[in-house]
Image (cartoon, rainbow, N blue to C red):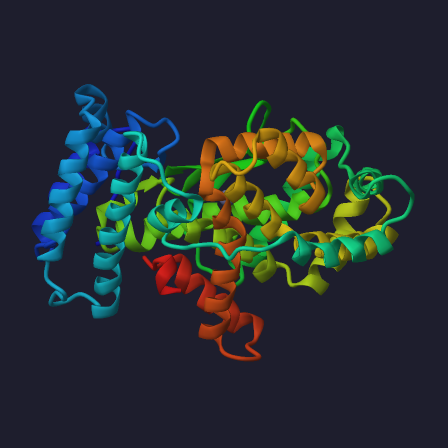
Amino acid sequence: MAGRGFGRVCAGLAVSAVAVVSAQTPADPLRTMAERYVRLVLAIGQHDVDYVDAYYGPPEWRAEAEKSKTALGALDEQAAGLVAELGKAPASVAGQDAAMWGLRRQYLTRQLAAVRARLAMLQGQAFTFDEESRALYDAVAPTHTEAEFEAVLKQLSDTLPGDGSLIERYDRYKQAFVIPQARLDRVFQEAIRACRERTRQHVELPPAERFTVEYVTGKSWSGYNWYQGQYRSLIQVNTDLPIYIDRAVDLACHEGYPGHHAYNVLLEKHLMRDRGWVEYSVYPLFSPQSLIAEGTANYGIDVAFPPADRLAFEKDVLFPLAGLDGAQAKAYYDILALVDRLSYAGNEAARRYLNGQIDKEGAATWLEKYAMYSRPRAEQRVRFIDQYRSYVINYNLGKDLVRAYVEKQAGRGATPAARWRAFAALLSSPRLPSGL
Ligand SMILES: [Zn+2]
């Protein structure tokens, strides 16, 4: 089923292309249900502006969702009906790879459970942090106490120069690693080039794939990939706060290669176009797919740039390009590695805040104290938590789950090539967080 184009540009072409494909291939018992799922997600998007992260199926499906504005209760009835029908769908189909078919069926069922949970939230049902993350992302983040973070904070205190509070010392230290505004794009373009080159050595991407980068302000996130279909993305980088040198490779890998852009390109190529699985033309943000998306995007940084490679690249290429002192790169990355061990403190702030144990102010203070966020960054993060809630677990828990899965698949002491193979297979398959 190759060469099919679901165009955003030409509605007529998209419809006729679907008709041609279904006439030439054996009937897909999930085709109608998949289409109803897509339409359902688009309809929820009418009530929740953040819900539809990407859509590149037939434009008239979206136009119909916009026109009909179906009520939330009716949408939930549709979702329940779809779940019941899916339960009766065949467990295997002649001519389809049994494992992939099983994953597809499970995936659609689980995505629909998340659809129903989001509908319940939109209708006012309250969930605890963990209930919500299990319902939406098919995972629950471990809990941590203050004492667990204290040991790392002590190590940081022993390492960071100067005096004042720990966050003041960290902030002051980091000032030497800000990318000057005038050099930002040059540094990012070089990081993107390197991430793309490394990814393409191991993962086959369609020649037409590309993205554009835009610099924006006034957002609760630091970067965003808007996948547009036809192997294109728009990547936005938020310049509200200073951008430190480590963000160049992080964002280039996370948003671009082998992260979100590559992931969406591979799903479009392998699942949507080659297999005709139309459910992949839509990406509901508050769903298990996001844990896989954020987890692979974050782990992908380490796959593309194992620590020693990364340090050499930063020191020899990016630091000079940003006008920074490469001799400081090693010490800087050692400190960042320590701070990274505090990432679960961010989940704790969100859990306590969303469970009503602390208020906005308390959440920002917690982030400042235990996760080493400067005050403006902590306030930005609280705005993120207000907007995206338990989504925060997808980054660190997602990364840890994806890492464990890929390392297990690749085998102990795997070569970088074996690791890339296992990683690329995950990027091209409909695996759920609980299946990792
Ligand atoms: Zn992301």
